[in-house]
Image (cartoon, rainbow, N blue to C red; front, side):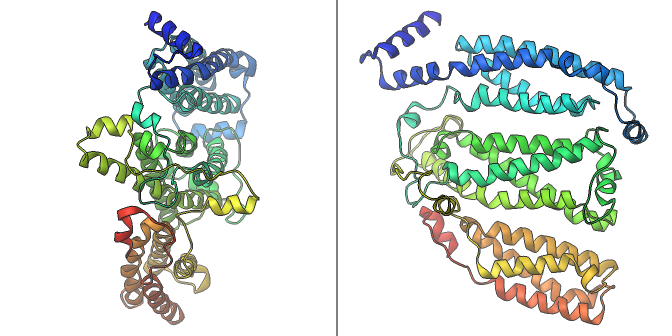
Length: 483
């Protein structure tokens, strides 16, 4: 292996034309990203020394926060948790250094091993209930950077050579590329917002702060994140949210503009992380006033950020699905194609610069595949109004819970349907509209004015959800499903 690596290095640097072009490109890529492994070595050293720099064992937690956490959780004492976190960082840091050295020797399993350690670092503070805020923030940053330098930037070897050689990035039958950087930018920005919000909530759950701020609902935030529903998790559920948003951010920036066909596995994993997590966030928003009888402003903002992410991820999933369907039609091994990618006949190269022109022009380029039909916009406003019928009409009991549930579902379905490839989902609003018409006569808790408002809202939802709205782009055979 070492002789082969030396041969590849020398021939790539000398431009030996007898060496296959794809091997030259692969070796040039490897040489250009060697710095990533040295960066990981430095991160490993930094991590191993962090407990002594930040003083994990000398942390003085807030007495009130410590007493609250002790009453909520049966946890080891502060000294024990600090010691566990110290050993974790020292051992993980040394492993990162060793695995980075092995990565320099072209051992591909070492890439994945370092990535696994990066994921563990983001999870470890939750497992050990670290009493040190510095250790938690340090683990998040180092873990994310280790993953970036292990796999995101080097672009793991093992990808299909034909897929790497083909420069085309626009799927056949499409008029834009769903994997451009601008297309993924909204997801990355929203993921950062989600990280900041969830990190604040996780700090309260871990006992790093003595209070959780809520601008509108008093102690609603503290009540929500210390409720029985939250304590049912063995670790901080807000911390799980931080980790999920971090993974989304890393996935959003991973790969180049061809990743819908060069990295199908990653696109599929990205879709799985974004959509289910969005569904979980929405469930908690629905559950708050129904089961806990209060609201949480920061939780609402998190759910909104997650919901807006979802339509931006759908067109790339469609392109990836069409690519795999085409590969199967051509007799390609489907699992090998899924994990390694391939070229695709009919794909064309997109030479349009993404980051040129005015900021407004770049913003317009970045919203391809997602638009806001007037009908769905009004349905979203109706959904918000339904979630507030307790305040607007004084509804209570079964009717108030129904309004809140239906309003949440209307917003969710309508936002998803703003993605052109998911526009048929708007039909799911129709049964919700019919239920709004019937609910006042079947459930208790609605005044006369609230009942009339529910009927009117139901009829408007039905009427506004039938029109398709504009479909401005081409998606090959998928357009037939949008008619």
